[in-house]
Image (cartoon, rainbow, N blue to C red):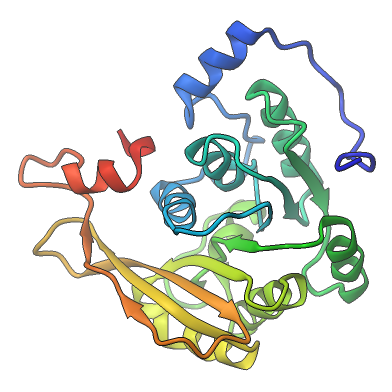
Length: 263
């Protein structure tokens, strides 16, 4: 069975009414351990980017899943299509992800796992358990250590700041998990795009889609959403830029169409 090796956590009884309420409130109400990084808009944008692609995805893996927000958002946006694994090195976050899966009624579709992306044995075992993996998603730490003031809490620093090895680590892990032709969707700060493109190329992930996200139409790009495919030589498409907010500082119609969870 898909979840035969699920992480052992305290199971909670959740009524159908409670599940409906939790899904309606999502992403509000998710359990997040004290001191951990609180997810932001970029997590929801990543899930929407992956969900809007015209491909059927049966199995996915979310790298650095945290409390599980990206995986849950993907499942809800695709109406529970497929099943997935959420990977994180922090056992406290994995416990929170398991609890959130219960609350959202997604525990049979989302399996949290504790593991390190640098652990090749862990990745091999995960690929065998999750195969075939059609999609890997990641919101990696894209701020560089030494550039900006890191937060005091260690968990938040790990979630936000990385070094020159961070992007290659995520890209190589995605490549190791994916089937040939499988997709890797990620979100990063727009200023780090050259570094991520280099990491993807080294991991045999051909870039197929790029979309820039702006806070407003006249502001510089804040995020870059990138789709790549394993061993792909397809031409890259640059999608129209997306402005999150209009002149009135509320979510733009285009951003809500792209990701209804932003409303």
